[in-house]
Length: 500
Image 1 (cartoon, helix red, strand yellow):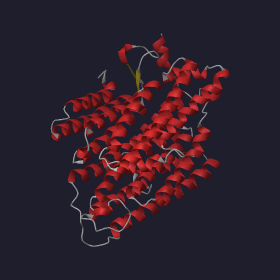
Image 2 (image 1 turned 90 degrees about the horizontal axis):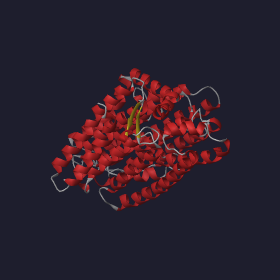
Image 3 (image 1 turned 180 degrees about the horizontal axis):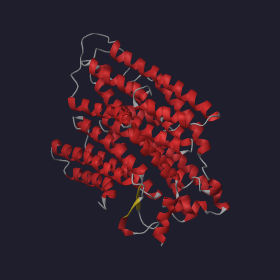
Image 4 (image 1 turned 90 degrees about the vertical axis):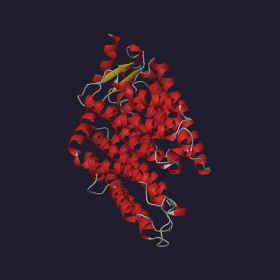
């Protein structure tokens, strides 16, 4: 298993290339290859989580070049966790897509695999330039997946999405170039040592490069005021694509944690924790903006998109605390929000298929064909994403509120989280009553939901229940993950060992 660390990148990359070569073959073969390869990532990710949980950092040196000179993949508890969440989310998403959504346009499964390769590579890389490369791989794939299915709305949202992310990529490249020019390296662990020992005269330029990266990650993470692209893009995408996109904002937050804990963290000298003072107000404003957007939404998919923004604000608040307990609470909430959001996007599509021309619009429509089943799933998903007991959202919010020390921060976070939760309940209750309780006519126009699609949606929503059932070991893993991230010495030893 020495090469297991590169397999989450290599497997989807090879399968994606194979799918392009057989694109003229029947849909059954392509679906079989894509679904099988995606679900193989789940046991692989579980193996890597087990390996990472030993507490040792695993390094994969491509070409056997020693760091900081070669391309390096790094596995710790955080990257292993993100690989597992991505694999589970992608597995149910591709299962849903294989029931017909993949035939709305060409090469869906190849693009899906390339995006997985980009996402997994971004989680595993230990080098800033290769983080940029993997970002571009996943973004190019996401551009095409967003347009998959055609339609003027998707094209308009796609152009908006492409332009903003091209701007973000340009800023990313400028920031990376500045860091390389000042330090002579882009290996994250090596950068941490060089930034901490940098000449004070270079501190303003290093800070400027760091803030450029913060802007880039804020754009990709959908942090206010850079989140306005998200509701349009996610609501326009097909259901399996929107579900997979639930991990995309978490990628921006992952990059913030990785860069501003390791490179500009507590050991960065005059630049120590330089962004924490910015993250706190940004988290509050993002949370408030997401709740207001959800209250104003007149489309179920737009409403769910704003709930993703709410989750981003909540996660950023845990990161902004700058403590192990705050970060562990954020990580638990990250897993919850990603799985439940993905399940709700799939469920919204199932509901839309039974509402005739009204589809996802929150207007009066004919009765659903299966109101009890879909209503029960929507109710469970709604109270989970809103943070009500007995589901994992409640545990995640309690952990976050307990992590805030008494003082001004608590006076800000508690009202925002609690009132925001009330706003989410109101928005979801209004949507549920419009869809399930106020049909324009008793006769349904839709067909019964496809069973595999129901299983895919239910599987992701079930994650909220499992997070409660095994909450204790998961919390222990999150606490160990946060402790590992704040202990920089093992990361520094990677470079010391490479130079020896």
